[in-house]
Image 1 (tube, rainbow, N blue to C red):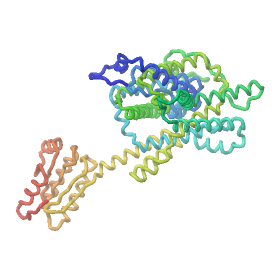
Image 2 (cartoon, helix red, strand yellow; image 1 turned 90 degrees about the vertical axis):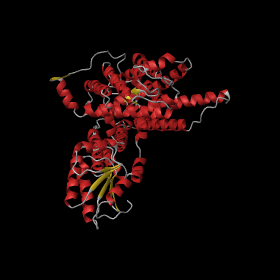
Image 3 (tube, one colour; image 1 turned 30 degrees about the horizontal axis):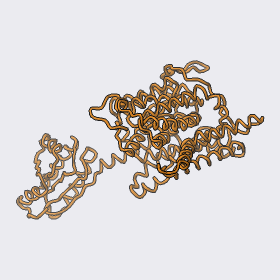
Image 4 (cartoon, rainbow, N blue to C red; image 1 turned 60 degrees about the vertical axis):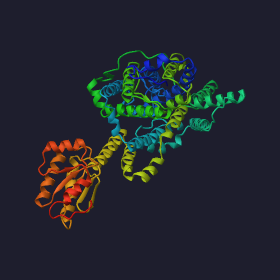
Length: 568
């Protein structure tokens, strides 16, 4: 993506469109087609995962492409339905399209507000162990959720533990046709993925036949989802022509583009109407979890690919782009979308040059809705299940447990809490993981490392800033050592690592000064940073002494009557 001079235009598209090169066009078109061939079958599969009619996956797959072309700051990112978002929608939309579309609108409004108010820093409070615990649990949950379609079972509940019990209890009812086709599709997808990962770089000086073969293999591996679904559909159609059907099929999908209309703010039910406040109450914590996880996924993907490809993004602009995409998407019956890691990787590997590749992807989805939905009737559900499982299995990071055990064992606590509780309910896992991470963070603030050294003076060195939870810990550490020291000696508080201090900490230091003074001991401060020094001077502490360096403080304290002068 081309660089830009400051000041940057307010609309991101104006940063690259005036300098658009004709040489970029074929690369953007090729990347858009590659992403589109991945997006269409995934859209159908993710709608099934979300518990919605399959056309809603396609409705959710084009608006994000167009919006991000105008407002996005990363050339590689593609917005659309993802496995994580579909799992969350299945938890909070209750298999009702009206709830899913309204959730997209409200999530977009929250994301827009966060972008305008620059509240993206809130995502920093979701730690890596919590994210890894959630995505790993989601990988298992989503994969097992599709086992019923691989085996051809119906009537399986959606709750994980009930699903596990019912699947094992009814495994004898497995339909042989679905099982064989589903496992074959899984094997084909795994083989094509491995083929792509081991495909060497094309050499421009290679013979024409070699370059053509390389291109064919690359296209087949990149569009593997579309190829597998197409093959499975042809097999199912062949059986239909012969008068038998061993597979459970997708069925009819309404043809045509979705109407442009506001999202539903009420829901008609057989015995009345569910009003807007009741819908909000039903969605509950999902109104926080869905927009936050959408932002987290999208910004993390944008940062990862921007860093990898050597350009920078604007996180606040990414929040705005995602918010606008969800708000406008709700007007075309979209459920919540976010950045897709898999499709973004396809986009980057295809050599996309600008966000204009999204226009081709969006157009391909619209063409599918307008003309191809009748062909989707013959797609077996087992093939779509294989597409989902193939997409989410790489999300499980088994190595994270070993890495955290080696690097920081305490981080295993939020990881395991999130991982285990997500099998019960997704929201419980995320909230509990964030709370545990927050408690660990607060504990480190309340119990900062304090180094105490005995010499001519008792040298006390806090390892971080002083805030109100740490005051008692500091007082106890200083008093216990100062009063027990023999012979008694003055106390020197080295504040070189203290960059901030609050009012409660100032009061605690005043009480510490008084307590040491009652026992005939003095307390001095050294190496105070300017902001901390100004706070302490403003507090006008009785008996407050400060020195620029530890050496000057040691000389001054050692010169006091009754103290032997030694080097600090």
